[in-house]
Length: 264
Image (cartoon, rainbow, N blue to C red):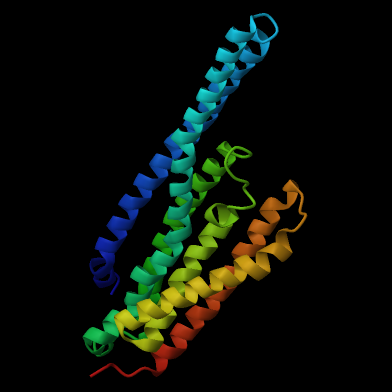
């Protein structure tokens, strides 16, 4: 059963791993370039400040233009990249839930392969446990790598482009919690609906709605006027919230599978 599940999902796992390495590698490169670029701008502008007191007004104005040009060049090089990386990390949990979580069980019901598996001496809970275990283990590794890369990227440009509080859900334990939750949400939707495309649509709508609710109502309450020393505490709180929700959704999937009849 483990080998069968591996063969079924190896393409998704290989593609996910490749995309993870590509994205994490690109973010790591930019992580090292941002401080170096900012240091170069600061050095240019510091020389301009010194020259203002020792040079003629015309030369001082030209030096000021040089400082401004260096700052604008830095912004053009990195602010766009920073935004693209943030958007990618914001979207990845939802995409994982829609394209990996939702089809995980829905496709099996829709294609009727569960009839074969369940008549080969494989219990429903073992079947579900192996499939979920394979996907969630891979997701845990991948999300941890991206969470670390996201945290390093945010730290490298703290105070330059955005605050780490503003981007707290694309880094650290919170990001891992979001990915696990999205996969559990998709799995539960697939187990309940048992049709791939409707389960994907339901997962997308539910994930976006829950994310908006957390962003609008929960996070402002938790993060208002909090000192920097509590950042990781609230990372842990948010991650725990989504892991608890994920556990509840896994319970829903188990309940649904135990009572399900294969589609004709």
